[in-house]
Length: 101
Image (cartoon, rainbow, N blue to C red; front, side, top):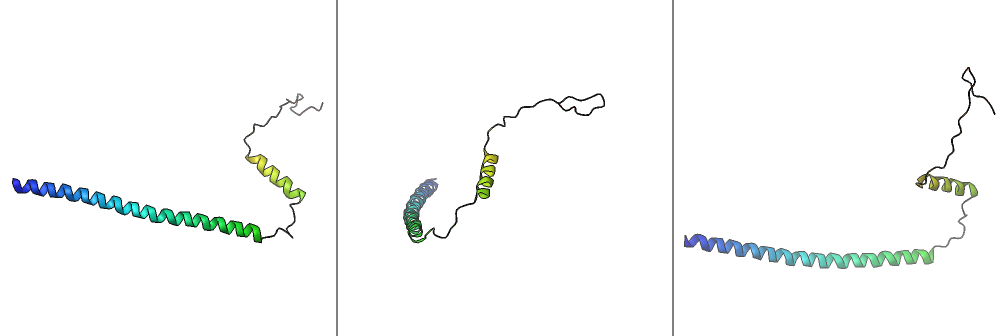
């Protein structure tokens, strides 16, 4: 029985050693990738700044009125405003045709 107790203690200690190593490795990975993403963010910001400084908007014509109208129609289509429509019933004659007023 004494041998089994030592084996159990060794297994538990190895288990905790494995958890500690996993924590250390994961911390190192997070540290390295965190620095990478910060550097990537800075590089993207610099690229946008260079594009904004170096690209001129000369020669680009403004949208024409038809394009503006289509843009407003599309934008209005996606708004969730209720439609305020009034329904007026139409009268019919005895044959079922609509009567003009």
